[in-house]
Amino acid sequence: MKDVILWTGAGQIGMAIARRIGSGKKIIIGDKSIVNAEAIAKIMAEAGFDVEWMECDISSRESIVNLIKKGQEYGEIAALINAAGVSPSQAPIEAILKVDLYGTAVLLEEVGKVIKRDGVGVTISSQSGHRMKQLTPEEDRLLATTETEKLLDLDILKPENIKDTLHAYQLAKRCNEKRVMFEACRWGERGARINSISPGIIITPLALDEINGPRGDFYKNMFANCPAGRPGTADEVANVAELLMTERGMFITGSDFLIDGGATASYFYGKLQPSED
View (cartoon, rainbow, N blue to C red):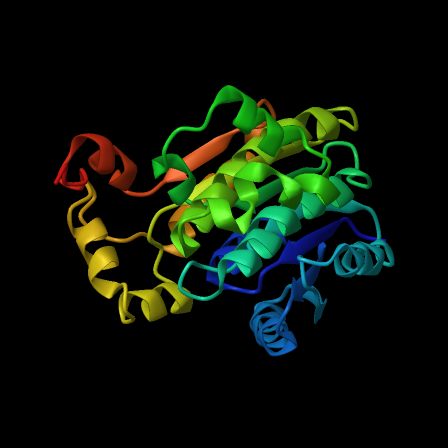
């Protein structure tokens, strides 16, 4: 039997993290696209990692439970890498809320029930959650603590109260940060830790689609006018994840780490400040 890593979202960021912490462990890759899961698993296997893959739709509790059961066939669940999600250009409001918000909440809840002592998780959020209009303390608390099956019934998350897909995405990522704080208290009762990372523009196949798509000018302007002057790489996200998921990060839980080249700082105080017109 081995310690098991559950990894949702078969993409470049998840793979960069898994390569840092996956040696000697069993890695179970879940993705809504079995083609993506198999392709990433092949790359990992050819690099010497012990991997299995399966279809997993994190918007479905049943699918998440099946992923966990698959992992438990090989040993205790020792780590979670959640890199699954959809972007504002990929999906309508309802799908963004179902996958990025509800799905992440359920995943943290279900894995939190079985994570081993000294286990650890990281979920990939986004800089978007840091740039939206501030919510009230009560709204933040509702996003953090509402029963998962009632989350999408909150007034703040009703489609008629959401302006567009970007607004839905921002709300989802704000919820991710708050759920991590809430779940860190539950995971802590098992001696385990959970944190989130909020990347800015990270070059991946998905990001390249965005940069070359209808919102491309927006993204190009963002990384050109942030303090770093460039987009980031998956390995730069993995640098932080490696700290959080190893013994060097044992005192870190319930936290969110913004990795965006200073884009959020620039949005509030630099060249990216919105026009007042």
